Length: 458
Image 1 (cartoon, helix red, strand yellow):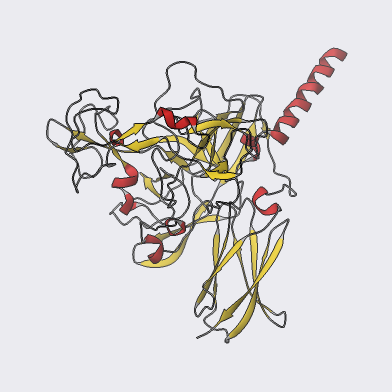
Image 2 (image 1 turned 60 degrees about the horizontal axis):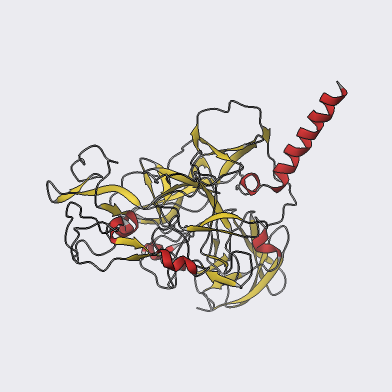
């Protein structure tokens, strides 16, 4: 009996230690107060929804973590200007991830249509595709809204599969995402279009929003989510060398566009059924097969492998782990294969479950949990200054906790107060009723406080 008690105590201690150290348990944004919001076409005032944002519950066993989420982010979703009639709707899902992911040493598993991972705010990750392909028997696109069905079904293997990032850009909201039958998802880096160095969509001008995080080229990108093989997903910047040295640099995709004008061969050079010739209607990059993988580029430490990742040290994994990265180009525009793919590095075991069939422990984040992106320096960008109508405050990195914004006059009187919610990056002050002059904006998180003067001039 004594030995059984000792073993039980050891197991309990081991499970508790796991919760304290494993980012697959610690990393999720838990929330039971903030609700989602959305824009409708023609109205730039967000509509409040009755659905909770981010993740609601995290539970874990010795080998798995279970995440309850509605699939709704804390940033404003929509509108989707390509005629998509869907809105981001409650997914009421439980996702199961392995706590100890392993490499697939056999044939790599291809990514598929639909969910291939989950971001830390509970929002789904899709791969490059949008379910539309080229049907050579009709010399036209098939699958998706407005096209005839593809032979063999919507996700059948075709020689030329359309790239969602290129083809569906008009339908992405400011956060670079859209819903499929209500399932709101990202195919790419979840940072807003208007934060890229060269902006390729004007949707943020009409419907202000933000995104999960802000790219910061001076610091290691935050942990953004987990792929269905259990390996973590990071933003665009990381340590140059896999051992955590070499400074911060942009992680680069090893895929490049092929030098072709006709689509008659696959990326491997094999002859395939012809697709449409390269044209303004079907530009290079319109199909996934327009890209080729360059294995020699991975000899350079900041280039990624065919799965769009590498084994490396990160702030959350000081001993190293295989990581995927949300690749962008030098202008911070999303770069193929965007996040994961076209195959997983690890053994794909994660996915939705309808129930939990093993004993689990509820993980409750401690109130004093430190947020890495705000410990050393709370960076904020306040614009415009001088301002006439509205002032926006945006924080860098990823906010894992609510951040209070306070607007004071120079006598110390509090004028307005608002919040940047966890998993969001921006908030606004309405200054149309204020007198000309200088004001102070104070930004406060659980660990840090900083302030900045602004001017109001009309």
